[in-house]
Length: 246
Image (cartoon, rainbow, N blue to C red):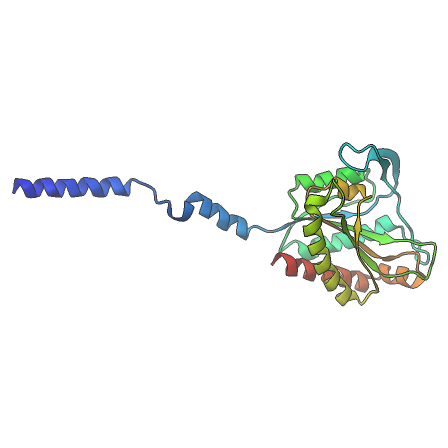
């Protein structure tokens, strides 16, 4: 009888000891963190190009660079509508924020035109936000008024400043261009690598710049100012982002 009691006591002790040890199957907390991160929304940093007044003070085109450019230019203007680029880009940016807000975490570089934010500061803000993508919205200009179409710019892989983000930026640019061009039926001027853009060179996160069209082309300028066409641009961007991130 005493032997049986000893055995029973030993079994109880083993059970109590085992129950006090936390389970760590598949990494425990790490597995939980992985699941949480998988459920989090992608972070999109929206940069409406330019501002009401340009800033011609100089800043380095990249960290530690000896080449300097104006902090931010004033942009172009519509030949037909007379609307400045900075107003157009903010109109589209605010529409895009609204379209994306349910499925993405949004960081806006600006919400008004009366700001003074340099291109390096814009990129740095997206870096600090931990953006999965910095999306820069611009419109184009040319001395030739017949030129029209959209361009999708991404940082060059041959550039020291951007070689680490070039590949992913290109992947996103390809998906975005297909979706936006399909939605708008705009002429395509291609997917173009750039190494001279301060907003690219200061970026530590994937970045794409969309030139939405030429404000120096009378027909395209008018189209860019139309709410219905802006909605098509936004819809195309949303479809492209959904395709890439989901």
